[in-house]
Each structure stands twice: as structure tokens, then as C-alpha cells.
Length: 331
Ligand SMILES: [Zn+2]
Image (cartoon, rainbow, N blue to C red; front, top):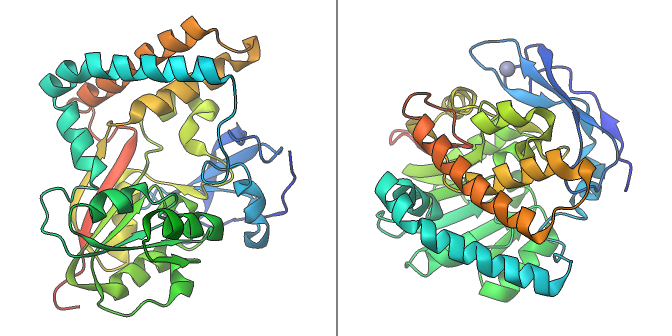
């Protein structure tokens, strides 16, 4: 475990208002950094952003990514892992009819292509492209794609593995040409950024007029966040510098100059967050048995379906926020 130099973040990164403490004692789920972390929520009810205070100094942040999933291979007993992975696939297969009947399958497909499955192909940039799997998937559908990631190692892998042009660095440093993309996607990225609003303004500049921005991010007003408190996997401290709700991300996107066309939460994929959050709760009593892990898998898929259904009565409580927004035509 490493230590990281921090700096206080006394004012809301979105609107400059003061904040009140909302969550403390959050530990790095990857175990890279030893300190416990705290989050504040903006007192401006129009904004409501949640942010990490204190936060790692930008020049030290690399330390928090040394054990991140784009840098490491999973270790463990190979046979047990392979068996569990097979069981996992079987469970998913058995659940397909239930997902189809409930509409969760349709939602998962919609998000798998970042809402673009039915959109005619054009030029797309994925900001924070990580391992590049989404870029490769959408490229196969005829899209002309580029990626960007501040992690040079991840960017190199995307170029080597998929032959996709990937810019290294913060989007603001990439200095891409104005009015050049039909679509920009940011999947689970905006919560990692030091300058979220400036990045959105940069997206506005490099999108063509009428171009589309699609963002997903963990929802800190989700059912899971409330249930697991400091053990919720979505906190991801200290890599998540801020967390959003539908309202707070919608506000920031509009403030940056976009017209928001879709703002909601979704539950597709929430099972993994339930499973890891629950594992965090169970950890003090030791590692789970193989059967325990299997039971947890079934439980987590049940919770995903429950959460999906709950949104009909409790809107905006799903695991992730989805915002789609357009650059105005007369921009
Ligand atoms: Zn604020």
C-alpha cells in the first residue's frame, strides 16, 4: 500500500458553493492507497454535486492507478476461477428469459452500444477509453473511431490490440480540431476528471453542430449507494473525484452549453456493483467458499432485477446515470 499527497477541495468543483460532509471512511477498493477518504455534497440544491475532499494532488494521482484493472491481471486459483466463470455464464444464460420478459435485456443492449445501436455510423471519440473494448465493438458496426485516455499504458494497448488511434492525455491537452466528431462517448469517465466542466466545454468545441454526447457515471443517489454506505463500490476513492446524480450531471451538462435530450438512470450491469459491495461487507469474516461465491452471484443478479423494477416507482435510483446531450446547431 502506498501513501498519496493530497490537497483540500473546499469549494464545489461545479459551482463554487460550500459543501457538507456526506460520506467518510471510504477505503480504496483496489487497496492501492492506505488512507480513508471523505466526500462532501454541495449545499447549493440546484447543483448537489458530491466530491472528494481532500483529493490526491494531480501529480500524485498515478499512484492510485497502479493496481487499476487496465494495469493488472487477476490472480488467484485458476481452476476455481474457471469453474466460477463457467457457472457465471450458466446463470446468465438461465436468466435470459427473465431479463427479456422484464426489459432488462433491452436496456443492457442499449447501454452496450452507449445508446448508439440504431444510430447511423459516423465519427466517434471515446474519452477515457480504457482497454478499448467499446471502441472495438462500435468500430465493427462501421463507426470511424478514436480514443483518448490519460493512461499512456492503456492507450498503447488499445493501439496495439485493435489498431485504433488513441490520444494520450487529458482531453484538454489533446487539442483535437473543432467541429470534428459526430459523437463523443464518456463511459464511467467524468467522475475521474479534475476539470469536469472544462472537459464538457472541450467536448462541445470538438463536436460538430448537432453532435451527440453520451455519458454514463455511477449514481450516488442509487439504491445501492444508500444500502452499502461507505462500502458501496461506486465511491472508488480516490480515483473518483466527484460523483453525480441525474440532476447534478444534467445541470453541469447544460451549464457547459449542451441541450440535454435524455437524463435517467439504468440498472443493466448493476449486479457486479452489488456483488463487490456485498463482498466488502463480508470481508472481515474471511474469504467466501466456492458455494458462497455462487450464492452471491445469484443474489447480485436478483438485486439488479429488483433495482431495475424499482425505478418505475422510484425514478433516478438506478446504479448508473445516463445523460445524452446535443451541441446546439447554431453554436
Ligand atoms: Zn455545486
